[in-house]
Length: 250
Ligand code: NAD
Image (cartoon, rainbow, N blue to C red; front, top):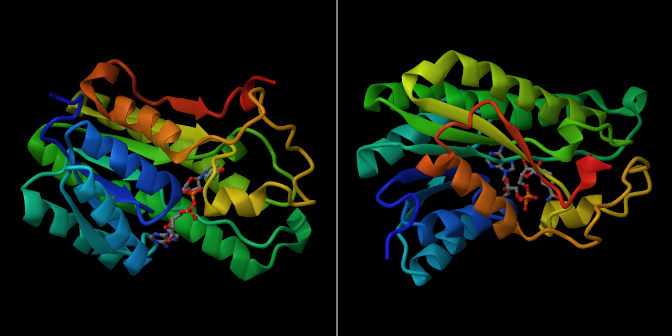
């Protein structure tokens, strides 16, 4: 049975947990080899085990996406292992303690921007040259409903995710004629360790909930990501796709 990304190589950051792990499993189901990049080593190896158990091929690469040398080395490892890099799913992200804008600790501001926004840029910085060498590729960056709507208590997070959307659009324009499509997904309310931490926070005053009145599952984001990477999305670039059960429609 052939999948929609058969024989391709995907690099998934934040692949040790949640949306990254769920997406790695969808990539594998659809025929791609998957490199899991994360700072959580044991859980990363668990994702590799789950992919292999499902009949796929995966490796783990320890990588802090906010450190340039580590991202460069991780991309080199993937290319060294499988000889190519077709997809980047730049998904690793964090939140900080909730606080009103004026009350965010400066170190919380810096860390969230460093991991979420600079981390995505660093991944693209090292993925794109390899894709240019190969003549093409596809990138999906994880933004959020918080990149489109304000979420009370999360100014640093929302600023980072809004930044990811504009980074995605700009890069998409720059590389559209070089065979590289670059899109974002904007998940809302996904049942992961981060999702469980966020929902129900008293500071999340703007959260009205989604129209389906249920949590999303990590694989439901993964299905969108893998489709965006596949040739089925050949005319789609620069798009920020909501995977949010209608949250942004309200
Ligand atoms: P999660 O906490 O389950 O997974 C995040 C993963 O990122 C973890 O494995 C963590 O170790 C890794 N990570 C954190 N900092 C890193 C770093 N510096 N370098 C490498 N890896 C690092 O959370 P999740 O819900 O799966 O989140 C994945 C992405 O989805 C994040 O960017 C998050 O902002 C976004 N998102 C999540 C939701 C949701 O409801 N869960 C909604 C919108 C957007």
